[in-house]
Length: 334
Figure 1 (cartoon, helix red, strand yellow):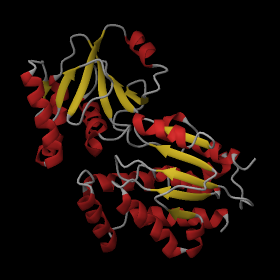
Figure 2 (cartoon, helix red, strand yellow; figure 1 turned 180 degrees about the vertical axis):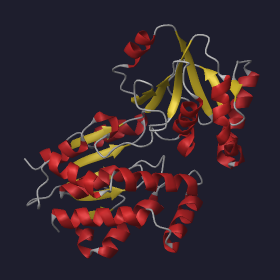
Figure 3 (spheres, helix red, strand yellow; figure 1 turned 60 degrees about the vertical axis):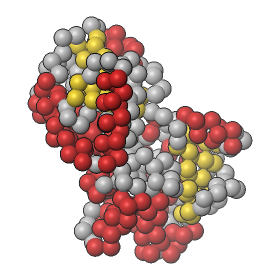
Figure 4 (cartoon, one colour; figure 1 turned 180 degrees about the horizontal axis):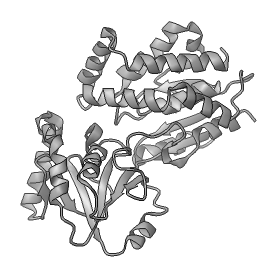
């Protein structure tokens, strides 16, 4: 299967992801039944983002030309891909890179995201049986030449041990932050609400910490967050909200609430589900200095950074953790 064949299949997959075919709607329902965090709303969001930002002809052509991808790979390597499952199809970009590069992707889906991952791989195989030689689904990743593994800080230590003798990319816990000036418009705050709440805040590109100027007025922000008040009807989310609410009350800790999201002053850039941390600052330059070089930060949202509302819309060359996956794969050919 040559490069053009693979590209055409990916373009077709992008079109399929956004159609209303009944079979696909059933797959979405099955994915939700398997993992209740994967609501239809957020599955659709993930599919639309992948189709729009990764699987359009221009984007694929740009990726192909940037990395001078060969028409055929004479000696393809087996790339073991350990996928995370925090948001729908979070591991798709790694699969895309391996497939487009001409290597053999040996995929271990997360138990939280098996339904979607397997469905779209099977769809590619249905369209072209040669795909089954290039994408394999296995629960034991043995005999691979290189590995791409995404997980928690704990699991990354196991990955580093198991894959220590192989070329590898190992990703750890990451999160994202926003720097506010206090001059944000209502529209920008509405978009910030999306960056915080989409996927129930479970993604590494979700905002889990705000940096706000001293004297910041939280009322407009809390009002903007109210569009996600329906989260409180989601059983898993409500359990988290109730737990952290009770903990703060028992500990006599000051908090604010939009009705479904708790705001807590805390130094940590990581916050639990249903909670958003914040920290006051005096000097924006000092904040920037503090954040620069922090390996735990995936992205920064703000007027001078990634635009509000775009945290969950990475481009095809916005590689996770800033590690160039495609460069890594191409160097395996040398």
